[in-house]
Amino acid sequence: MNRCVKSLGVVLLLSAVGLAQTPNASKVGAGPAGWQSASPRSEIAPRFYFDRKGGPKGDGSLAIVADKCDGQHGWWQKTIPIEGGKHYRFHAVRKVEGVEVPRRSALVKIVWQDDKGKSVRMDPPDDAFKGHLPTAEPEYPADKTTDKNGWTEVFGAYRAPSKAAKAVVELHLRWAPGGRIDWADAAFAETSAPPSRKVRLAAVHYIPKGGKSPMDNCRQFEPHVAEAARQKANLVVLGETITYVNLGKTFAEVAEHVPGPSTEYFCALAKKHNIYIVVGLVERDGNLIYNIAVLIGPDGRIIGKYRKVCLPRGEVDGGLTPGKDYPVFDTPIGKIGMMVCYDGFFPEVARELSKRGAEVIAWPVWGCNPLLAGARACENHVHLVSSTYTDIKSNWTLTAVYDHDGKPMVRAEKWGTVVVAEVDLSQRYFWANNLGDFRAEIKRSRPIALPEAR
Image (tube, rainbow, N blue to C red; front, side, top):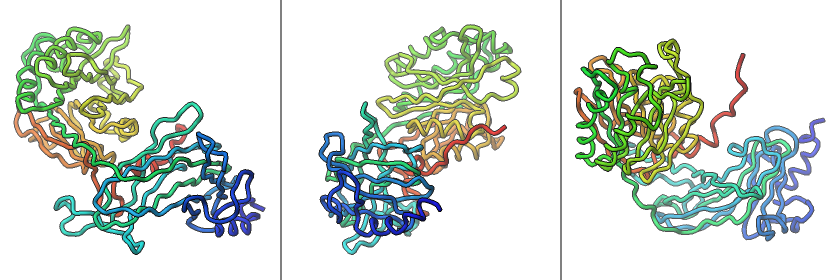
């Protein structure tokens, strides 16, 4: 007989009283300091106990232990009085053993309630919901760093809905056969409001022509970078492979090392105008050639580069090599990721960048289905900045800045123009249909990657 079924009577009893009879457990009853155990259904409840010698400092931990069977799910919870409209921070540490996918199984959930324990509505952020205010959905604090002893910090800061009077903090273990989690140092306290993080994002709608050399093409972007700076942009995105376009040369003929002549030119330009630049180039590294995007800082230094992962037929035939990594660069203006053209046809690239924390994705793109640009922004709740060589009359890719909902905030209508949009990276985007801050849920809900299909 399945172990979960055999132990069902015991599980029901332990779920009811809150604590299991386990070494170092406190007496049977409610947990310490108001913590209570809970489960969606008693028949899938794991075991709960307070380990008096647990935690990183040895002063106790709230433990949850699952049997070696699928589907068990339970949590410790505590209800904390709050004042609606104020800001609060959550902090805890957790340690797992035998948990295959901690991001899905080991999580914190914070539920907002009124003084009667009922759900509350969101505060009206703007007119986006057309008079209908959705429920204030739960918050999901993020996993941070893990120390040498295996304790992972979990943190989040939030503004409580104005009608909220309680916050129910839940410390979960779910879907982890044979796994154990210990929660310690859980705290939920009032804090100050986060500072605004306004950033001005720009994209250039221009295709170089008439040049004889890669440097000729580079120089044609100088007035557009200057215009972006004049409009007080913090970041400007230029086109794909600008040292190759309309020169009639092969990729190999225009490929350069990085650093090299083209990056040196744009480094000087970035420093002159005190602006971040993302530019598409062709890189040579030994006998290999890559289609890349380079991020340059306002100090005139290269911050990093991204090598295009998804190559279309023409680039494969041209002897280019795909990249393998998805770097995200933490800068004073935000966490910036990059992808290039054909990458946008596949959800995996933007998702990998989002998984690594990207808040803005810069996208030099020759041409792509515009629906995919919106999808990449929407499905990851990131800002996406695209610079294309496609004429707007073709109903294809846009030079634009996309918001979290996948809609262009601004878009270029004419060649040789620069579009700029101001965004506040401290502001979260909420979906109305029972999803709330979906970006916070992506990590907890996205599927587990499967082995490559044959």
